[in-house]
Amino acid sequence: MPKIIENKIFEYIKKHKIVKSKDIEKIFQLTQSSSRRYLIKLESQGLINRTFGEIILNENKNFQDQKIENKIKTNLEVKNKIAQHASQLALGYKTIFVDSGSNCYYLIQFLDRNIELFTNSITNANLALDLGFQNVNILGGTLKQETKSIVNFNENELEGINFPISFLGVNAIDEKGCLYTPEKREAKAKQDIMKRSLITVVLAEKEKFNTMSTFKFSDNDSKIVIVSNIKEKDLKKMKLVSNTQIVRIKE
Image (cartoon, rainbow, N blue to C red; front, side):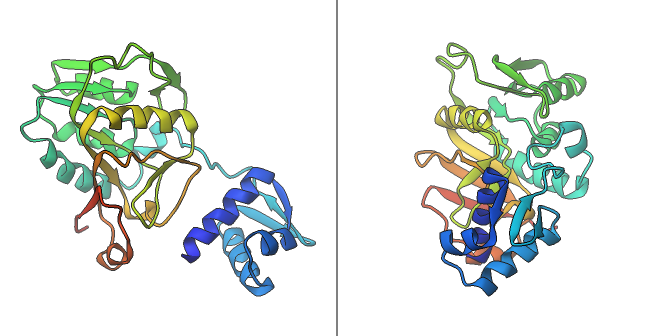
């Protein structure tokens, strides 16, 4: 719960840019000392600056999606382990959707080269071709610069397409297992895929748990499996919604 409150406070500051300390206390029903603890923690992360009773958003900090070229170079060992484990869930499927994002990038190397692969990622499509995949399809729409991913799918692009299984990336996961991304178009694209998938597999490092971002894209009607290196003690604290399960891997 403290982490959720911290995230909500930060989202409020991010929206308003400059706020008063007393505003935080009033809106979130906190004592002065409790409010100060949350703000000190946010400041220690470089997210805000505190001065003369005001809280100022540190706009030099990048809160949005990082460039995919940078993301695929970080945390390589963990991402490979998550991707390899998640790939076991794809066995036997001939048509698979793979989302943009660094975890999904590493997933591709573990998939059967003979599948019919659909993706919304230029980066992941190029990797698949380099690895010898014979049937690679990119969904049409608007290309997002940071992630090299397609958003705002063309309306007729998904007509008649259904995926037995899809693999998605995620930016944040709350205590119920609900999924979040910082960008509205990304959320809509992920929802469009989930609605057309019998099973959705989400790849996520442990750091993405017990956090929130701006837009929730979970679909309560879809079966969701999250593959992660989340610690067992943290997993036990979660109160997952009925359609979601977590497969924990050891680092």
